[in-house]
Structure formats: structure tokens, C-alpha cells
Image (cartoon, rainbow, N blue to C red):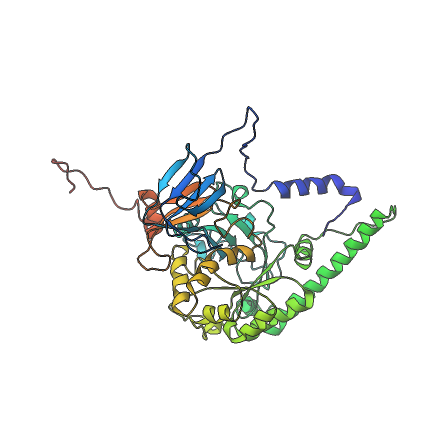
Length: 464
């Protein structure tokens, strides 16, 4: 909703300026200007390339200029600039960086301080005004762990302890500040949840105590958002008509974010497990006409046709040791494949730290083992997730003009023997397994790297 505030135009202008500037990086120019900076050209050649936008290329070439992909194709069909830095990836596999549609890296804490870090606000079940970006710590080790698993883009969320948990952040996993991590132009999503998690308020004799109240809270809050939108629409019409008597409504940060949901600018990212809970999510989304992605969706395969006919995507989590969560008792490893066959767009996420980001390729392998196609699993790690975050024009495939986010693997993507060798974000290497410091994040040894004394050399140059 565009809010035209006559009396506060300068303030609104500053807000719009700040929103548009978040996460922007200094641009490099390729113009003929004498002061222009020449962009570095990187060429990765020799690997088997999975562009996702097309069939695999057995011996491919990827050309990166600055932060963007300039070309991708088979050896001999792509022009390699003479001044390019060339990386020989013969015998390796190259694919787009992984998009994790549901993560808590940088906000939950590694290891979690006091159990949960800043992931859940427990002062009330409706918190649309909260922003994950205000609690993300770019220095948290979990972010580097994620890059060691090949994750380049993530939807970092508040937790599922509230009916409306707050605004999520769409980020690239690089940078020293959250402003450097945020993807320019992206608002992020709105986290919602139902089922057992938000019912924890019952322990304090507070609502919601039942699934009925969870749904009622969601509906009543969106009713308020609709009324808030009407008030501002009426006010803006009066201002546009030149009225001098127009009374500016009081601003409400939470309602503003929910109006963005109603206007289709924010996607609801909804934690939900059981089939009946999934149908409640769909019912409310039908009523208020907002876009929604189902997250976890443990029993989504039981209502796959209902999901498919609404064209609602599902972001699933794959686990090989079910248990511990009663509403996930009907987890079936075949679920992702069933959804795929029903025509549902499927992504795979970690919910880190439920599944460690290092193992997201293994998750996709489990989905393949359960009946999902290899092509579908690759899309679930890349372009499907990107589209669930409205980022499909930037990431998720290796195509000319897209961000140069890619990973190099030691072997087939879904082999248990395969390691992520390198992770690149916008043409910059952020993880290299051959670097001992980076290797600690890939193996889990970062917590113990400095706890033991270094071995002392012997008189003959060996080690004791």
C-alpha cells in the first residue's frame, strides 16, 4: 500500500530511500567512461554443469563478469575472454547455489544461547511488526556452516512459536552487516504458524490454547489489516482530491506489513504439519486472497490435490530419523515425490538448526530415495525455492544476467560421497574446502579447532 502522507512527506521519502538502499553494493562499470572500473572476468571450465534451466552439460564453461553470469554452455561453444581468470574444474560438478527457503541461521545462535537465541518473541502470539533482520548476527558461525553446505541464499525466519511471528529476511550469506546480506528490492516474507507450536501460551493461561483460537487470531488480525488498508486508501483519496480536512490515520507498523501481505507484496511463509492444519492455512488464504507457501507440510502428501489445484508451493524438510514431534507422526519419505507427481512446486529446506545446513544436499538425496525425480530434487534446491521467495529472476539457475551464485561439487549431487568443494556468491568465493579454516565449518570442527595444543615439531622435523 502506497501511503501518501501530506504532513509527513519528507519522513516518508526518507523511509522509501532507506528501503531502496538496503543491501546495495557499490556498482562496477563497464562503460567507456575513463574512470570506469574494469570488471573481473572468471571462467570455470571442465565441470559437468547443471544449469537447471536446461539439460546437464557434460563438459561445460561458465563465464562470470563481475557479479553476474555472462555465459554458460558446452566447451567450444562459449567465448573465453583472453584476460579471464580460469578455474579448471575438470571432474567436478557445477550447479547453482542452493536456496534455503526456511532457515534460522544467524538468528537462533550457534550453539543456541539459552536454547533459542532471538528466534521467538514470547510476549504475545501476534507479532507482524517484528523483523528478523533486527536480530540476525552476520558473524554467527551458522552462516559459514551454511555456505560450506552450498547454501548461498536463505530465507531467515522468526520461529514458529506465534500465530504471526514477524517479517522474514531474504539474504545472501555474505557480508559483515545485515545491510550487506539483504537482497536489494526484497521485502521478505511474513512468518505464520499453526498446529502445536503456538499453543505454548496455554502454559501461561493465555490464548491460543486450541487450533480454533489460532485460526480465529489469524482471521481477526487480517480483518484489522483490511480495515487499516481501507482507512489509508480513503485518506489518500481525499489527499489526492485536494481535501484540506483529510485526517491522517495513526500508523501501525504491524498492520503496514500485513497490508503488504494483502497487496501481494509479501508472501506468507507458513509453518504447518498435519493435513487438517494445512487445510486451515489454505482456507484462510482463500478468504483473504494472499500468497502462501506451506512449510514442512509433513502430511501435505495426504491433501496433494487440494494444494495443487490452488497452485500453492510446499517447502518440505526431509529427515531420516522421524520422532519427537507428535503432529509429524505420519511423516513419509515419499511425501516430496507424491507432491511432485501431483504437480505441486516443491522446495527443500533445512529449518537450521533442525537439519544442519551442511547436509541439505543429503536431504535432497533422501527425497530422491523416496521417489522424487533427480531433476525435481535439483529444482527443489534451486529455482523452486528462488521462486517461492520472488527471487527467480536473480538466482536459482545458471543463466546469462543472473547473479553469479554457484557451487562446485566433488561428484554427483546426491551421492553420500560428494563434498561441496567451493561456494561462490556474486562472483566471490565464500567457501573453499581446501582452506583448513573453511574445512572446520564443513566438518563441524570449528567448535574445537583451538581447544587442543598444537603438536610440537621433533628434532628431525616430525611431530610428537
